[in-house]
Amino acid sequence: MFALWYLTFAVDEIRKRLAWLFSSNKPAAPALDNKPANPAPAKESAPAPAPAPAPAPAPKPAAVPAPKPDPPKPAPVVAKPTPVPVPATVPTPPKEEPTPKPKAEPVPAPVVAPPKPSPAPAKPSSPPKQADKMPIPLPKSLTEANTNGQNGNAANGGNVDERVFGGQQAEKVLPAAKEASNDFIKGETNAFIQSIKEAQQLGERKQDTMVDAAVLAKLEEGYAKLAASDSKSLLKKYLTKEVFDNLKNKVTPTFKSTLLDVIQSGLENHDSGVGIYAPDAEAYTVFADLFDPIIEDYHGGFKKTDKHPASTFGDVSTFGNVDPTNEYVISTRVRCGRSMQGYPFNPCLTEAQYKEMEGKVSSTLSGLEGELKGKFYPLTGMEKAVQQQLIDDHFLFKEGDRFLQAANACRFWPSGRGIYHNDAKTFLVWCNEEDHLRIISMQQGGDLGQIYKRLVTAVNEIEKRVPFSHDDRLGFLTFCPTNLGTTIRASVHIKVPKLASNKAKLEEVAAKYNLQVRGTRGEHTEAEGGVYDISNKRRMGLTEFEAVKEMYDGITELIKLEKSL
Ligand code: ADP
Ligand code: CIR
Image 1 (tube, helix red, strand yellow):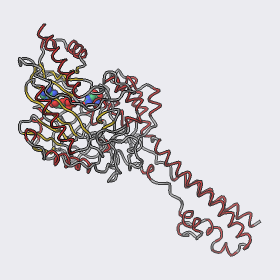
Image 2 (image 1 turned 60 degrees about the vertical axis):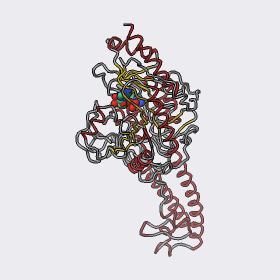
Image 3 (image 1 turned 180 degrees about the vertical axis):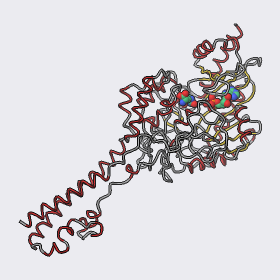
Image 4 (image 1 turned 180 degrees about the horizontal axis):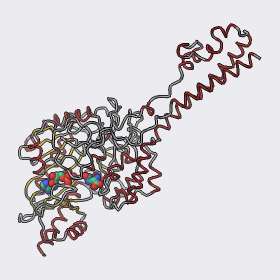
């Protein structure tokens, strides 16, 4: 009778502990709104020149709670030095605790050195989801006592044996009954421990593929609003309900980036042209159902089965002056983007990494000679007037880009951001704005040949010193899918008043030659004084040489047309 009572008691006790164990592991109910208590300044609709130097922007609790903890598994997609397979930039385990992934900061700003990729951090995003990372704890009574055959700590509640047989009660127990019960309990306990371990493993596996409730709620809400909007973005065009449902629970293996990390810029900015970014290189694979059709649409037919050609700058002395009579073209610029191996994209970078990268870029560029010789200017500490002048003169990236901010790409601004340029400002390198590096060659007039030659020389020199992320299919890896492949944007600032008298017509004609029209201060800006920025649109599925030629040929045709009107 007594033995039976003990057995019942003991089994019941174990059940209770098991229940506690599982309930204690449930992810804390995530707040539906992850925004920080002090929400960052409302989204600016324009690059509004950031005023005050803004002290370290308080991490804005990303719109997305994505915790991005340590990067454990070998990401399938990892960036390789130059020629590499699918994955991309990848990381090494985060060096520091994931910091909150602030969403966007207003104020902006600088660079670094030698190759050697450094450890990649975890994705600092919103409040680290503790529940995701914490292994399910075993009750002390089970881990210590039952597994070791020793008594647990009574102060902590003691283990089952102690609570059943300990103290006064134990003395009243018949030795045989105690032994029988003990064996039974131990057997049951071992089975429980085994099942708990299995549950832990299952839980950990699940955490790799599950998205928490707060992210899902934001996704559902954002998707519904986008679907009901008149947005012309490629995001809206290709994020069908089917694709959305298929992707909403996925996360990237290393940084745990979610669909929200990918699309939140387009969800917050319905006037986006594209609307998505890759928070980390693996996102291009995990969220391929969305990236692939957008890439195909933007890059003029680059299919998911296509492979980007090998990097080919071709004969740099091929191009001449795109406007020999100097009547239309004010200035010409060719840029390319590069991501440093071993570092993820903006949303996953820690502040320490930003600074480390800046150091590497700065020291690497300090080794350049001749026409490329220059100096690195960190944004941190740069006088506002100097910064604004550089922006006004089209040398420096603007500040407060709401599309980038919404994508969590402006965290820790201006830390790690900066610009390198030679004295003539014909060769420049942006550090850690949208991409890790933007390598730029530009000058007044239309001498594309000279500008391209300078760019190619610079890229070759820098590539000797820094390993960049490259994928066999996608080419050079960048944060925005519009820049993949060659990453080349060759543009002219041009005045074609007759053609531009009808902006829609200008865009239509430009599109015929695969050209894109932007405003004077770049993307998402208006033309000032009739000056348009016209450049090659596609960057994938063709070589660097062909991308530049596309601009050269197209502008030549536009000038002919302007002359004929
Ligand atoms: P990107 O994507 O190439 O970095 P943006 O559209 O953001 O381009 O423009 C960045 C800066 O480069 C802007 O200040 C823009 O005016 C300037 N820019 C682009 N093309 C030219 C050009 N041909 N001549 C002078 N400035 C240019
Ligand atoms: C948009 O969707 O309009 C912005 N996210 C910009 C997209 C393309 N431009 C870019 O800088 N690569």
